[in-house]
Image (tube, rainbow, N blue to C red; front, side, top):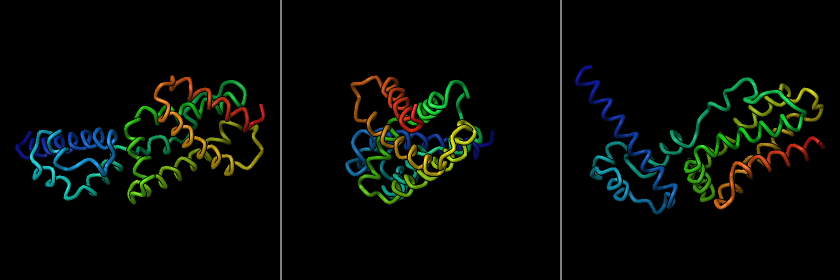
Length: 198
């Protein structure tokens, strides 16, 4: 490995550490109350080094949202990411629980993401629109495959489920005293039963 490669690797490691620390701080206390000086202290670097990687707090927040708060893995799946077992409501509940579970695996990211979107942060709002759109597109692709017996409006069902998934995430995030797995599965089953009338 050349000296240049080592320097690049070290720079990428430093940038990763900064983004991880920023996510933790901003997820805990919000972006508006997280200062660049506080973040530099948490990373054990000087503020000038922090500004070398991120010229402004806005650039830092944008990078955190884009690189930590969003993954296109779910949206890029062609087939539904759950088994096609059981009745229609069981299959739909499994899909909803899977999507919510994937989101909960990055709880701090969702706290930051939703909090900043609520505060009208332009980057967070743009990412929320992108995530919402891609989830809806994925649901439109998965519903006919997972629920071949469904003869209703697939696009309308995808929009409904997308909205309910966001609502479910908010309920779970504001209920830290409850068993989140149980809550997710309960809400997924209730929603699937109501939507499919079973």
